[in-house]
Image (cartoon, rainbow, N blue to C red; front, side):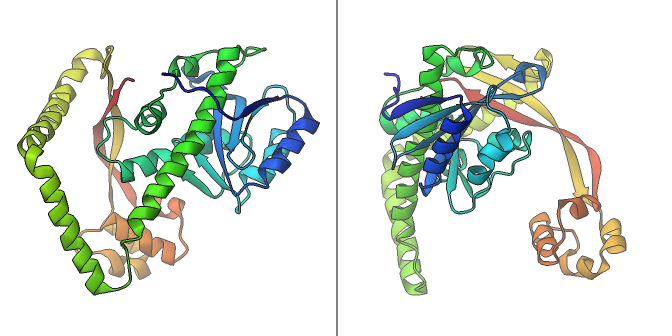
Length: 316
């Protein structure tokens, strides 16, 4: 069964309506945000539609980014607001999209990362897969790659865009409730923490015992299959797709921290992090403590070759 928007859907293409909608969204403590772009096939993303959904007002606002002028000044009060939490699925995409109009998304949460942390054994963390898992309803993702620069948009595109934002909001609420429930076991009492640890280990073992051998078989198979896919993909220009899955080998830089450069450029930090090798997590923490940013960190990073990262995506 496909998900249909349950909250009111409003198409916004005039400045006055847009300003009123932003003012209303600013009254909410949490809003979901999603964007639709055009030109991704050619390596560019032209912002076409911006969607916001919020439960207190039970509305889905769809802003026509192609016909609204001064998008930066329109969205800035909400996007850069530090009091209103913005929720997105794969928030890194929205971060990049809003950067193209000069805005920096502030105070945000990512349902993709939350799902990976709280439900790590799901086979897929795509938005549609999460909607199916939590609500037994999926999203028609075929509209994701439709032409969002056309006007007027098709009714199916409007429903899809509204559904994406609305579902993101609802999934966030579910995941937040799960996190709140689980964190109730975290106390400042070391005795209680150790008791809880032992109890959780025993319960997990009891739960897994009937399926332990099968689970181990599946874990082995998954790793073995991934390694075999990694070996075969170069025969297909590092990319292959069928009705079940999409596989790609992505070339990435292989880097390491240069101890010589670290000693030369930041001698006051070098002695704090060289052990004899440099742990990057500790290095980043010390750089942050000394108010040094990524650009400073890059000065002590050197390329030592390249490697390939395997990306596997199960289709809905």
